Length: 440
Image 1 (spheres, rainbow, N blue to C red):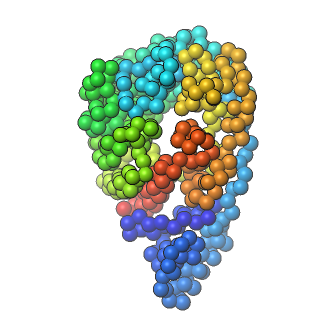
Image 2 (cartoon, rainbow, N blue to C red; image 1 turned 120 degrees about the horizontal axis):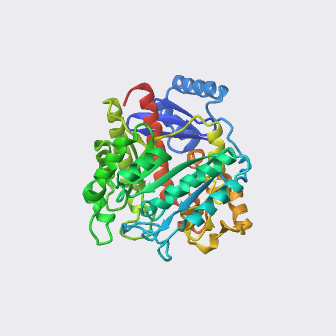
Image 3 (cartoon, helix red, strand yellow; image 1 turned 180 degrees about the vertical axis):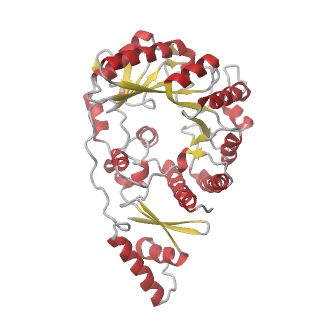
C-alpha cells in the first residue's frame, strides 16, 4: 500500500511493500491521494496526469511503488535469548506514573537473592540452544539499590557463559539517584547500554519524579547523569524521559536534555490510567503538533552541527532481516522473559505480577507452555486491525502489554498509541529525507 502525507511544504509517498520513501510535488500528492486514498481529484492538465502516471509506472517496474507486501511471519525461534532481571522490587523514588507501582509491582517490596539471580542465569544458558550472544537487562525498581548483587551476577554470568563458548551483553535502567563513582566505573566496564531516567526541565521532572519524602529529585540526579555521560565515551547510553498530559510541550524537555550535553535521547508518552496524567484522545492534536515542532528543531540542530539522536525519529526503511523481525513482533514470552525477585517467570516486565501470565519459575522452568505458544504465534498478522495501516511494518502492531492493558487483548492496538506512532513515523521519515539531502 502507499501512504501519501505532507510535512509543511514537503510532500511524500511511502510504499509499505518496498519500504521506499519518495518526495513529490503537491499536484502528484493530491492526485495520488484522490486516486488511491480519498479526496477530491485536483484540476490537472492531461499532460500533468500523463506525466504522473508515467512516473508511477516507472517506480512500479523498479519495485519501488505498490510493491508486494510480506504476508506471513517467519517461525519464531524457541531458543531463549534474553532476560529482564528484576533485581529488586523496591525503589528510592515514588514516581506517580510508574507502571511498576513505584517499584513494588503491586506486591511486597523485595530484593532478588544472589542464588536466584544465578539460577536465572543458569535457566537462560540452559534454554539458549545454539545462540552465542545472550542478553540480561538489570531492572527494578531501582537496580542500584542492589549493586553488589548486580556485580556478582555479572561475574557469574560471564564465567558460566565462557565455559559454553557464549557471551553476555548487559544493560541496566536507573534513576541515577545512587549513581556514584563506583557504579559509574562498573557500568562503563560491564554494561553494553545504560538507560537513565530524566524527564527534562526541573519543574517537569520534579512534578512527578519525587523522593520518598515527597520532594523533587532533579537536583539529586542531574549532575550524576552529566558525570556519567561525560565518562561514557563512545559506549551506548540514552537519557529517557516520559511526558504526560501535564507537559504536552515536551519538545522543550527534549531540547533541554540536548542542551545539557545528552546526545542520545528518548521521550516516551506515559503509559498510565491515572486520569490527570494520561494521554487521551483530546490531547492527540496537541501531541502531534508538538512532534512536528520537535522535528523542525531536531533538523535545525543537525544543520547547525549540534545534532543529537532522538530514538523515535530513527526510521529504518531498508527492510531486510529487520523487516522479518518487525513482522514477528517482539520476542516477549518466547525468547525473552522477565524474572521477578522470587524467580517467577513472566513474558516481559510489563506483565510482571499478573498471575494470568505467570509462566513458571527459573528453578522449574516454563510450566505454562500454552502462554509461551500464545506469544510465539503472535505476530503483526494476528493483529487484524493493522492490515490497512501504512505503519505496520515499522511498529509491528504496538506493544503487546500496552494493547492488553488498554484493550484487553494483546492483538488489539490501542488507538491513542497508534495515532502518536503514526505521527512520529511521518516526522522520522521527513527527518530522514531532509538529513540525506542536507536540507530542512
